[in-house]
Length: 320
Image (cartoon, rainbow, N blue to C red):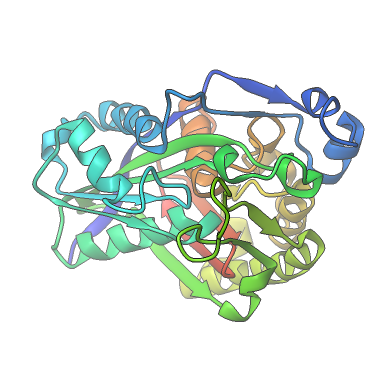
């Protein structure tokens, strides 16, 4: 059985930036109110010419370049997104064509903010089983297109962007373990209706609905538990983890998980202040930033974790 190893990372953020101050003119809110509750100062937002697949393409090309691969060498593409270009075909198929990597398997994973962790876990199993040798795993989200900009409890939290990794078969240990879980009893706490089924009026759109306080309570408890489960599965102690890359949902949730790990915030990769919550893109965006600025070095142990609507949650323990 092969090991699966991350050999390249890449990311993309749209040029347009929306600050908390920008929201003050359209909502009953302030920069201080948003920042104190979320840790967010600004977010990136796509323009009308951009799409989930166009962002994914740029992030993917950056990851391929870092891995020293051509797109034609990729035999598996998995895109995690909750804001895909079309109902079908999948964003992965659209991305495959954009990259000129046609022929291998390509499909989307819809696991909300945990989508990248789920996609990474699936790619890992493909490689370990010999079903793929070189995989491209992407998280890409255009959250701005599913937000209700009259709802200050949700619209200020999210941003757009894409992150990608190349995962290859390797003799060296790489992705040590992945863990995926779900509990559908919480489905009504964070969701987006399907406009095909639920929206009746012409011109209506399906927007995100979030019961923030309830989501927060379950997220903190669940993510603390998944930390213990991941370390136990690998016979590791908390001190063995060099870096924590959490889903960038809320600074208070992130701080709680870091405390559970006894990890100083200096060892937590944070992008939330300038990127907000980019859903399935947040973990790979943060990973790429920390790899490229030199913080995360070869051989270090990284714990990635995420929690999202479903509820779904998961983790990945990776040796870089």
